[in-house]
Image (cartoon, rainbow, N blue to C red; front, side, top):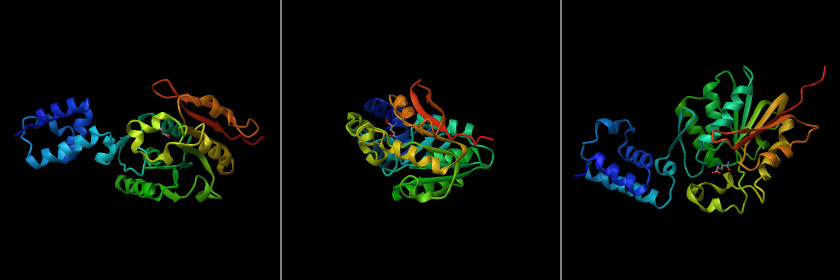
Amino acid sequence: MTDIRTILRTASHALGDRLEAELLLAHALGVNRAWFFAHAEDALAAADETHFNELVARRARGEPVAYITGRRDFWSLPLEVTPATLIPRPETELLVELALARLPEGGRLLDLGTGSGAIALAIAKERPDATVHAVDASEAALKVAQRNARALGLKVTFFHGNWFAPVTGETYDVIVSNPPYIEDTDEHLGQGDLRFEPMSALASGADGLDDIRKIIAGAPAHLAEAGWLLFEHGWNQGGEARALFSPSAWVDVSTLRDLEERDRVTGARRPSLQI
Ligand code: GLN
């Protein structure tokens, strides 16, 4: 009989990561991680041990923890994720903060390429006064996002289609997106968690900016006067992203940095009408 403490120590060593071992064991046992504190001496049932060892083996072969457990926390929200959705990253919380700071009382927000719904749901959670719409080209991803909205009791209206196609005629105060932005030939696509994530959520043409170009081109027709477009991009794409905004159509073009002090979000605003 192996106890909880021993099996966690062994798995942490094998994976080189204590948190991952705890997340997998919590998933195998259907408990939360806090439970381990009071149960370190408990013996593990043989069936649970076998199940846990299978999960550790999957992780050791590279599968992301979030896809093994089907869960990932983002902002304050426990989210379901599947291989149909990108795994939400902590740096994307910057986009949520910037959108919240720019969304007027009772405002309207659109999230393009919502995936698991992470960004739209975080904003809906903080701002029940707002109207939040979210679009994704993947029906499988939208099903996950809808289940997340239902499980969290949050109101987001979801639309299926490419970028602005399903929201023709709608206008917003803020449009946000974490689009695909990795260069097609970037070697990182063949490494780590990215190997298991949907390529359509990661890669975007030779310079990684194909989808960002489409979003910038389509946004003016869907933004209210003085409305904001904000999108995430790679740490080395800030300058190129700013250069895509035509000075005749946009003001206040700027790039903001994430907690690791890397360029992460670029945004710009539609001009106010002159009086
Ligand atoms: N930030 C992710 C990564 O580089 C990519 C996400 C994206 O393309 N939107 O791992």
